[in-house]
Length: 208
Image 1 (tube, rainbow, N blue to C red):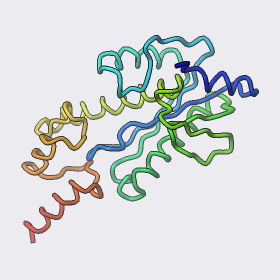
Image 2: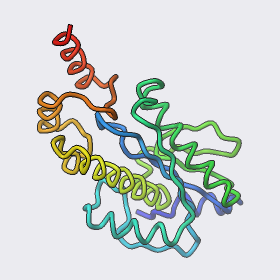
Image 3: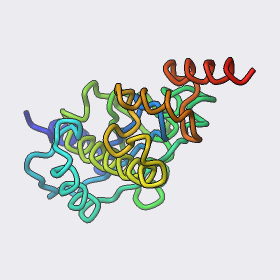
Image 4: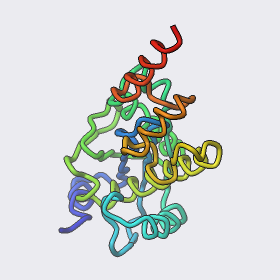
């Protein structure tokens, strides 16, 4: 598969600066959703780059270093509290929009391609289903978003080692759910997510 297919097609249509955006952290019970926007130089080359979820942690870290040094990029972060207020879909859209607007302060972007997410911008946007596996720009954004969020979870693990964030990154694994049941909820949990809502309800009943 040619990961430059969408970018080259848009270049041929006259769009010169194409930004790609993706997010990490829709599924976890804990922590923010993190989005990245990236603009690649025309000569960008990184063999093996694809959807960050398909890469090993070691490879993601290595690719992350290369991407941040050789592209124009920025991130948007939306907290667990705001995810509860506006829902994860809208929070993902907001995080992407924040990241895009930061990049647009650095370079004039002509077009945005996203991983299946429609966005309201004053420039054209193309949502691509499974975009992180089809577009090199979205793939690069997915790597930065994933590594950035994983590093945030490692920081949380240092503060709260009993929850095991370094292992599950906030996702609802069996061990994670066991830890929440044992130690209770701390700031950073998404209270509208079903497993967390159930535990919160149980805590409320116990403390009545």
